[in-house]
Each structure stands twice: as C-alpha cells, then as structure tokens.
Amino acid sequence: METFFYNEIYNNEKEHWWYLTRRKIVHKLIKKYLPKREGLRILDVGCGGGLLSQELQKYGKTVCIDPSTEAVNFAIQRGVEAEKISIFDYKKEREYDCAVALDILEHCYDDSVAIKNIYNLLKPEGIAIIFVPALNCFWGHQDVISHHFRRYTYNDLLNKFKNAGFKPITQSYFNFFLSPAVYASRKLRNIIKTTPQSELTNNNFLLNRIGKIIFGLEYYLIPGIKFPFGVSLLGVYKK
Image 1 (cartoon, rainbow, N blue to C red):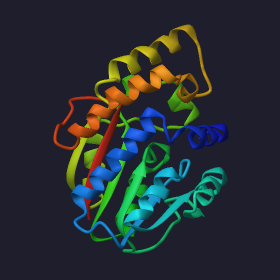
Image 2 (image 1 turned 90 degrees about the vertical axis):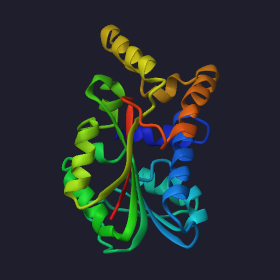
Image 3 (image 1 turned 135 degrees about the vertical axis):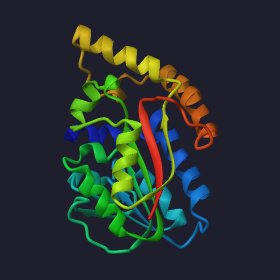
C-alpha cells in the first residue's frame, strides 16, 4: 500500500462511513460467534490506522502485526501491542481465540499460504473474521494505490478457507446498497482519467453522512441476510 494512504486511514478512520461501520460489524460478529467475550487473545492482521486494534482490547489481549513501519507506529500510538512482521513470518502456534484480517488477503501474493498461517495461529475452535474486496467489476484506482493482487468472488474465498481446513460459519457479500454508486464512480474515473490520491480525499461531510446512513443499514442485516453481490465480501470461519 502507498505510504501516504496509512496517514489518510489514521486521520479519517474514526468517522469515515466505511471504517466506522466496518468496525461495528466486526464487534457484532465477535459478540455473536465467540461465546466468551472477555479474556480473549485476538490477533489483528494488518494494523491500518490502529483504531480497530485499540477497540478490540476490551475483549482481552490484542496484538496486531503489519509489515509496514507506518502502520505499526500508528497502532503503538493508540496503545496497542504491535509488531512489524508479515503474516507469512509470524509463528505463534495455537495462540489466539480470534484472528481478524480486514482487507488484507488481497495484498498477499500467495493468499492460500496466508490463510493457512492464520489457521495455525488459532486455538482449536478459534475463529477468523475476514473482509476482502469483491468482484473484478469494481476494480479501480483504489485497488491500484492499495497494491491489490486480486478481488474475490464468493466461491474463491469459500474454497480457499475450506482448503486450509476451516469450517465456514457464515459468508456474504456486503456494501450492497452502495455498490451501484461505487461501480458508476469507478467506471467514470476510468473514462475521464481522474485519479485522486484515494477515495478518502473525496469524502466530504454530506457524502460521509449519506454513506453512514446507507451502509449503516447493513450493520443491522449482517449476518442474517446474504447479499447476492457487493463491493466487499465478509466471512467467519472456525478452526
């Protein structure tokens, strides 16, 4: 990921409609699928701006890892234990009750190895909460500056976790309601060749408010409703 993007995440993730609702969904999934909600050991794979890791500490000990110096420093500033290391090199057999990897696997050249490493890091009955970008029709400048190798289909993600030994608990596309607007916006930028530094820079107060309302609806519907398509995919898998 481009270095400047870590700064944008750190400065915007608290109130930006995408990051705010995404964090709320993670908390909902943890509360639903982990019967014990305190004293947990949680691994956050990919620090981002560190805010999610900070919030996850209320469930127990949270550790985050990231190969980026910028991301690790932001997490440390938020009071989180963080280590500069990739998921490929981090070895803590059967250490964690939960691993969270939000929009991380698409950055991995060999995502199957990354998924298997996540499996090995979990205790028996531990869960992995995974978010990834979905469907190549949504490919755009954001994927380029984020250094994505791929976007996923439903079956792509499902099969890779099954092959690693996981039992799927739930999986669905999401960011469904805003997907027509995202599709149109990205295709228009491709046509007129506008390339803002990131989509965060175009997020004014009104757009952010609209995003919170529309995307926020999905918080109440997930994981009960399975959307037929969307800009992203989420899954919860058990070891």
